[in-house]
Amino acid sequence: MNTRVSSLFDLSGKTALVTGASSGIGHHFSHTLAAAGAQVILTARRIEQLEQAVTEIQTNGGSASWLKLDVTNQASVEAAFSNAMTQYSRIDIVINNAGIASGGNALDVTEKHWDDVISTNLKGAWLVAQQAGRCMSADGKGGSLINIASILGIRVMGGVAPYAAAKAGLDHLTRALAYEWARFDIRVNAIAPGYVVTDINRDYLNSPQGDKARKRIPQKRFGRPEHLDGAMLLLASGASSYMTGSTIVVDGGHLQSSM
Ligand code: NDP
Image (cartoon, rainbow, N blue to C red; front, side, top):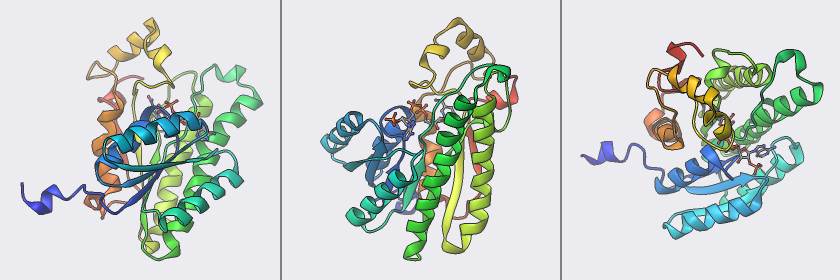
């Protein structure tokens, strides 16, 4: 393979901040980013998991550190970004990934449940995106913001109204920010995963109902976090330098069948 092609996804010298890095997709992406050469800042609320992940990355020869960050709290988001800028001088890549699940008939959704889902999955993503935009535009060098949306932001099923509304909002926020921040060379894109087995859904996917859901996926299998690596590395690296405002669906074909 020639060097131009083999270096397409190289992230050496880049700094990446990941929200929701204490488990699941964010935890996995932190390892992948480090393996691609980036210095990775892992953030979440559960710091024991972050400490452990940082140790694992360092043991594998990567560069990583952690910061506590609660996406629902503006002061916490600002403090984490400010700390990251002090430590690393710039942030090139932000994976806006933190999120919570939500289930239940729309008629039974309480105001608190609605507020919890929206304040994590939409307002929290906005607070992180805004800080990312401010940091990346400050020195005129830009960067790549990757929002982790969902196929439920594109097409719906029963029992997920607040989650689907938040993810649809995040998808549209992706386009709005891409439009506004192109002049700063900040690219804003999203990944919309289908079912990926993590703590957020493991119990459901292992249930008989989950098995029915699996059979509706054209590829007849659930995704694993590593199935998202290709899309993430594409969006994080210069390989996607002419992409902004895009949502990449990674779902085993699920959107093409019934939900
Ligand atoms: P996990 O439950 O494994 O991870 C969720 C992460 O979000 C955790 O690291 C958690 O960290 C973090 N988080 C939750 N609330 C907050 C908060 N208030 N502040 C900071 N961090 C928070 O689930 P996944 O890895 O599956 O989910 C990651 C993203 O992918 C979510 O946005 C989810 O909606 C999305 N997604 C997942 C799919 C799937 O099938 N798994 C499908 C489509 C989208 P901590 O609790 O330590 O703060």
